[in-house]
Image (cartoon, rainbow over all chains, first blue to last red; front, side, top):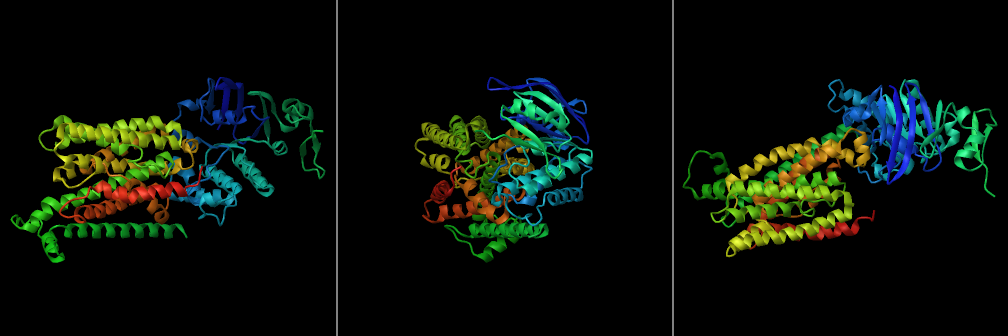
Length: 257
Length: 336
């Protein structure tokens, strides 16, 4: 499914947060959205998800504007994970992952078996075995984050949008998430992810670099994530070096003196 | 614990709940100023409809106790399910029809309806209609207040409730000052004047209202993740919450017509049941209806027997239980 945005503008509290964004992501795309604090990454993701309406411009799924889709229909086309997850949830892990199946409750082609299978494979993919019956409020921040990602996977949508999915995770689980996202993309899904970790972003297929609500650069990571450009956009000296073991590249800040 | 286990456990709890409700109903039918033993009760039950109408037992049970006990079940079911539903909708265990000012709004509406139509007893339909309109007014203010954050939302409900209680008292006393029982009914709740007509009218309203609440149960589960998450998962709260809150208004209106303003049921029951059957609204809402029924049947039996032949208003009994409970709940709740 093709997710596209044209001429997006968004304002809140009198300030312009998104200022003329055009982009397109398609099946198999694994796209990272990066940029300094306040660049509009999360706002852009919420606009793409149809969670907020742009002041100007349109977001479309396969050419159909998302504002014309019902909440329910939209939930079967795109899954979205926000930045903050509620901590005081009294449901257990399995029940929360199952909530990802809510959009299919009235779908005649859906079966209880399909629900069970989606929930089980989402939990397995996120390494949640053994936590099924634990109450979410009793979990650590990182575990809660994995439960939330599993819930988004259980939605089985052609478009998946995640806001900083790896922030609360240890390095092992960060790698697991990247593997999961890659397998979603190779399944033909359209995957857009807001990231802070620029080294992680070098491993995506495409990178969108935002500054002040506009796209500063967009393209392959090796073209977008260069020392000069990052130093300019982040207003801080940044170096990009090759991994000593030849495993891609590392984006490193130069320490302040 | 596997899924099959938890389903089995839920069924078990429902069976236990229904059994306790049946015991409470039968016990309440037997206990009273005129006590009825198990044998005459069974004989009467087996003979319902055979028409031995001059029998004292038949008159006591059919005309007085049975409608009253059924009204208690209906009031408890309405308040219990309304409490569970409101707590899910507003994401706080402190949401209660009484605390949010719902019950008081319905009470004021009912009292106004009563005042405008009196004298001439207790006209069910006008009172029911104005209770419902009062509840809708309460709904509108609840909807307006949801933007203010939980603490202010609840506090404004309490302030609103007090004012409406005062208006209720004035409406009643202006037209009916010599009749203190009517005042007590509206302000403190009572099932003493229950009629079959009221029970039937209220039940007709309660069933669809209960169904609407239950129908939105999964959506209420999603709301526990937060409004934005629920919306992302396809639960359109802007569309559904007014429907849910409206259904709660209908249930509260019906309960006020039957029993006046009875507080704390919606607060106590879901809180007690959550640890037993879990937070899922598909089970919590019907379980709270059963639990509320049990509590009101027991409280009403106490209300009419403990100071017999005088009656203690039902709402006083529930407030005497619920007030300290609310205090405890507020004290133990971690600051958020």
